[in-house]
Length: 81
Image 1 (cartoon, rainbow, N blue to C red):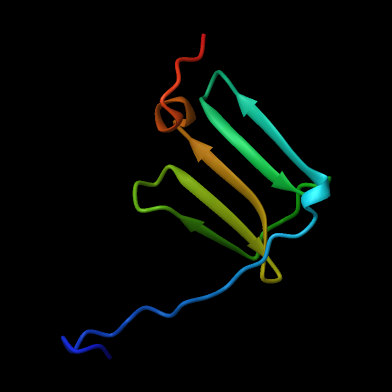
Image 2: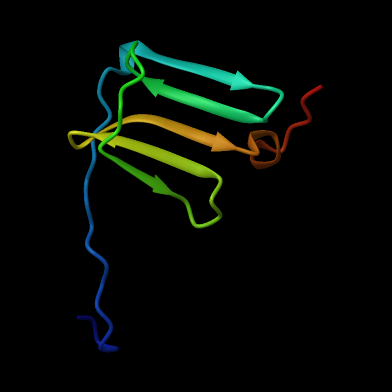
């Protein structure tokens, strides 16, 4: 607990491996950026959603296997035609 009597959330650490095998794909129709770490798309053990529900981080065996960013053009501040 901290000084205000509130409990702090548990902190977890995850790794990103296979940086030499990273690949990125952009889905223009749905405005989604996919970032994958490794050549194969792996099934995830866990998934985390950002507070604004636009970013999904997928975890397997304690390592990040992919990140999906929805509404990418707005987040990046770019116009995609």
